[in-house]
Length: 504
Image (cartoon, rainbow, N blue to C red; front, top):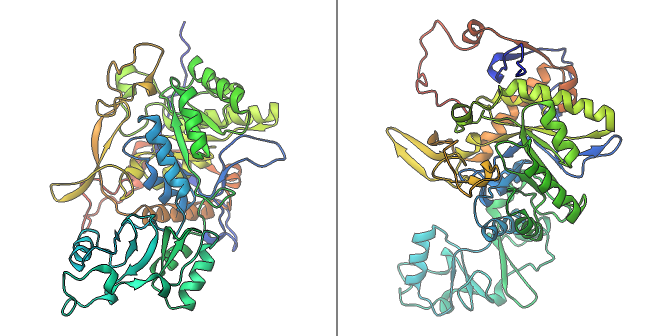
């Protein structure tokens, strides 16, 4: 006879945190959101930790190299989507690893034989007033000079004048070399009153430009997530079909962590994938697995060698797995049970395996609830899809700007590997939808707002770290009536957001 749970499963919106004692030291600026990403033994530290408990979902509409860079600057990690060719995914990882904060690859370049007319046309196209003059007109050619708006006067310089005749020549430039650090570059910029500093290699080829205007921006990322070589940390998703080819390519590209992207992780396919990674790389490669919703699923993946376990089935805003297959569980209940299983496993083995709450996040406070219930970090799709840095298109619908957002199980993505059960190499039916989400602007502004709410709530609970929150948190189930009571009610709001776009 089937096993039937006595209690219904619950979502985050059915819970509230109760306040705890907060002393004078419980201020948001004292809160640390650093959290482990990979398994570790008792008394040791994790091989990889993230500075904020936020990761971006393995989705075409969410995680590319642009978003990975932006999120790493804020202290989190992106898992670049795997439903693309191995070469394309590895190249995205390489672009993240090669990106240096403040070091910009020049995308406005001219040759010495080009004319002022060419310069003005390029400026109109890129809106950049500074252009590198290189031998071949490329971003990494031999640097011959710079052209800025101070090098010509539209009223006097003929449009046919060649760049070599009015540019600032190389001999008059202050430049840095391959060993120049960002602080050193900024010192040169300020010492010589420069607006930009070219960085060249030993052969005089242009590598990067560093701009004075970026100085303050660089100072604004105190939590940026870097590896031991000062490169941004980056993750990537893999599947259980082509891992023997995909994993080596991603490792060679410099990936910091992998995760098996699957709608359901309690399977032999994931065990095989984990076993191959361990046999091939030992513990040198960090790899997470999932998704699961109960103790059995967690223990299976823990014993199979997962470095972290993702929790959640059917809770994503674009996921229709529950509608299509009747499989899943309320996200809050799933996190609570798996967290208990994780603690039990830790007590038995002395090995701590972080868990990631994936799906079901609608409001900022749901992130705090997930952490309080035992998650070490959360994975977000719709949240990040709304930002400038996500790869989807921004479109104008009605009176609002929206971003396209589609599930990996939709006909648009056709990521059949994510739903692979060893059958045909195709998506037999959809488990995701194609949709829009309200456009929300820059990632940085939104993430910092969300994190400020999390820190403030933690202070209300008397906690200055995620571990302390989990130890001290008191949660209560709420009734449908009290959910209504928790929002604005019995008033007429001014400038009311009637379409619900205040959701994350």
